[in-house]
Length: 243
Image: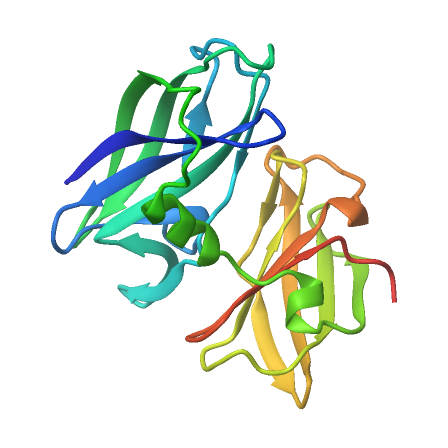
């Protein structure tokens, strides 16, 4: 269904290393974005087996929306090159990258898959790898790049200890099938898939957020992440102040 390998990449001028995980998916199978949608399985990565690795930043390429059994999911098919920005603990020393991962792969059925891949990275490599560079270029636009204007979020309590979130973003239409995905910085919070409506140059989305264990919580607005996906371009928005 899927084969995963490490692409060595290159070392940058600041001492960090750009590498990638490459997912080769069998025909008819797909895997999921970090926020997989209504029926997907979110990927999990554990980097603790690595050596000389202080920090990993994943650069997600723009995913595609699909409808499976009437439910919208978000992910990738065929080949996914997932760029990684790696910060070493000791600058100038090579990194051994090791990752235990749990991912979902789906066709007519969804299957959870556990994999481990490991590889020592060549710290002498300096030339950018074309397939990683292409994946980096496929990321969503930033707010500045997309010309995003006003961004506000209104929050109100609902029954069951959750909150109702209304997010409004002033931005020109990016394509058909626009959808705003809401994420929080707290992994214990669960966000229902939002309902998005465009009114001129404003996209409005509503979503409900609950604690996974039914507890009360404070919502950190600075940790909110709004991603607008469409059949065309996408934009990544960090933080959402009160209206």
